Length: 300
Image (cartoon, rainbow, N blue to C red; front, side):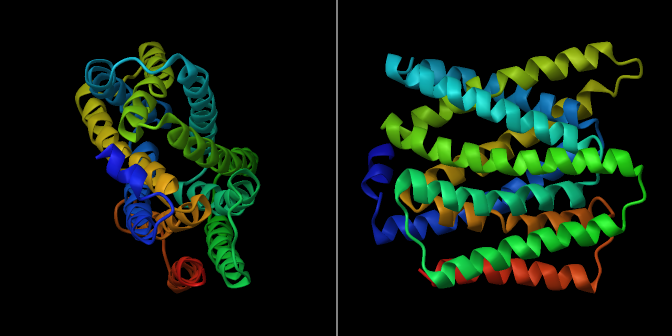
């Protein structure tokens, strides 16, 4: 199947499949983000997810695909570093601000930077109409963040720090999206790369989450926390795996933009599940975000 995916690179069939995968990744990523922000401390939530990913991915990586070529180890090290910094920024942001504030800032910053990086790294080209779509999508996402920000009633200093970390997270989204797209293409074996990606990039927060749990006075029950981790790990396979394959067989920038429709799904999750307020203006901004994604997809 890996050879089949590689054969789709740069083809119309590959572009269509990339669109579908990017939208699947958007839904999954919104759920993934809500799991990290939900009932538990975000460090523990991410730690439990990474424990599950480490346990589930290790046997697949080691026994099914085997040890990567020596030339891939520095590439995989870069993956680990970039994703650790991203997870660190997200945990620090979620620790201080609401999900519906942090998530749009991160996801609204990412597409603009990713498209610029895709132009520089991969030589991708985008029409004026597509740029208008990107501005519509990112603008809608950032306006949604501002709208949510106006409703916050937490300590202003904590909120400011949370927003700074959210902006850092957005830049790191662009960094890992571009780097992962380059790495998975370089690997020549997309599923082997994904297996080692999930295994190696999950060890850090698995250790950090376990250490944080051991130092807590009032520890949450391990059962629900580990269950959240397993569910989150399975969703991560879909979220990150789908978008990586999309950036391999299609345009990196287009996949990144389509994935950021996750903000619409995240707002709906925040509304219906996390009980965060969503009104007519937010719904209008969600339409603006979705419209931007449609313009990018049809304007090429």
